[in-house]
Image 1 (cartoon, rainbow, N blue to C red):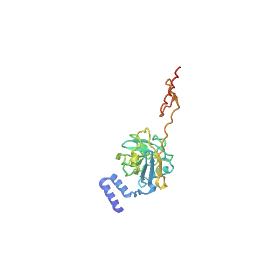
Image 2: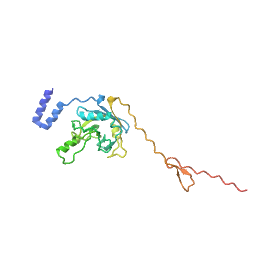
Image 3: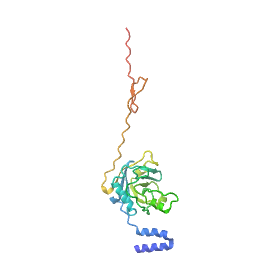
Image 4: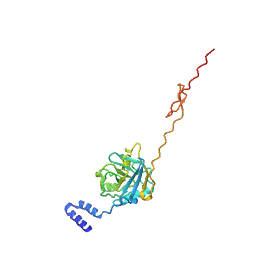
Length: 251
């Protein structure tokens, strides 16, 4: 079977040219996809938006990036990180400990692993630096090989990014929690990853973020000239005036 496929690839070189032939060769040499039920390749993201997102990791096409994500997850690197850049109709980006898109882990950069997986809804891809317009080949290569800890989840298909960013996974469950991530660059009230887990590590069930206590009421404030005594600025009602006793009648 492989021999036949190799012959087809060679024939394609003659007919369609080397670019198409390269894609054919990659198809022949493609490793089998990781099982979608293999817990070692399932990433859990517990989001502040209300639930757990399950991501199918693909070490068959992006082994280095998948290994990086699992390493950082097991170090609890992603716990508490914000979605710092969220563009409606495009994607939600996270994985930066600085929270502004300029940070990463202390581990070295991950080289590009561009592959055939498309940037469709639910695709998970590695974020990286961009090269300046008109940059030379060396600068472009440096940018392509600059992925580290940041990644983004695609809201709607953006096929123009295919083979320009490393797609390393796909959301299997919980996309509704991705859809409700707060938008903005940066968002005013950013959503966050509460916890990240590799499924093989037997993580606990999803636990919602603790509800923040309401702001404390201020100290009592005297309202002058009203005869109302003291009132608290906040949610407590103003104290009603104490009625005066009628003066005794003179005999």
